[in-house]
Image 1 (tube, rainbow, N blue to C red):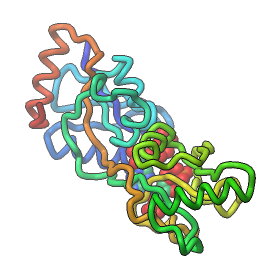
Image 2 (cartoon, rainbow, N blue to C red):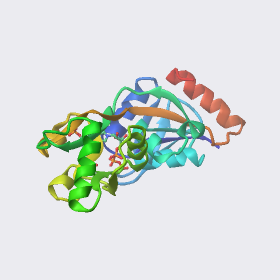
Image 3 (tube, rainbow, N blue to C red):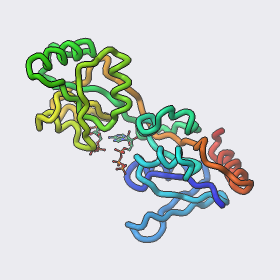
Length: 231
Ligand SMILES: Nc1ncnc2c1ncn2[C@@H]1O[C@H](COP(=O)(O)OP(=O)(O)OP(=O)(O)O)[C@@H](O)[C@H]1O
Ligand SMILES: O=P(O)(O)OC[C@H]1O[C@H](OP(=O)(O)OP(=O)(O)O)[C@H](O)[C@@H]1O
């Protein structure tokens, strides 16, 4: 059998990943029609390309269904409990940089820090009879961060996309989402708390600690890691 390498199936992450491997002599490509999720690997034997949603790569690594995978560190830390027991970071790839942050309405002039947010949350509950809502898809990371920073009087509301719009839509008072240029936050009149950085993320090559390998796969893995100068 071959070493399975999971790579994001579309967009900038896929293109940059193809480039990163290409620069190291391993050519990844999509094959078949535009819509067919099939791929090929040239430059090393015994490696198979598996095109997957970036969000599903952590789970596939943890389940041992792929041996290697490229995805954002944010997704691995969010989706896998005790992530470092399930996967190993082989290399940071230097693209896909994004910060997971907490932001509140720019009009909240008295709220600039987590302590301010904690005070605002208590006041909000007293006034409205329900807890201040923070919209996010990063439930695990946000809960851990707020717990470690002593913010308790809030509730998370799930938002799987267009998270910055939830404040305008009045389904949340604050957001925890990734930002890269900051354009989306600015356009939605939100400001980052001065101590509201939860995690700095970038695209990373991970190796599964759970995927068994036969002799041929071990040899292919060694060759690939040598070419990529990782390990
Ligand atoms: N604007 C951005 N700039 C840089 N990196 C980003 C940006 N948006 C998302 N990312 C990163 O890209 C990775 C994939 O994000 P996300 O799951 O939102 O992608 P997607 O295209 O929606 O993928 P999916 O196929 O799972 O729907 C994450 O690690 C994230 O940190
Ligand atoms: O700081 P910026 O450069 O503006 O980028 C940040 C935006 O990019 C991501 O959204 P994406 O485009 O993945 O769409 P989504 O909101 O539907 O997840 C993220 O969720 C932010 O909304």
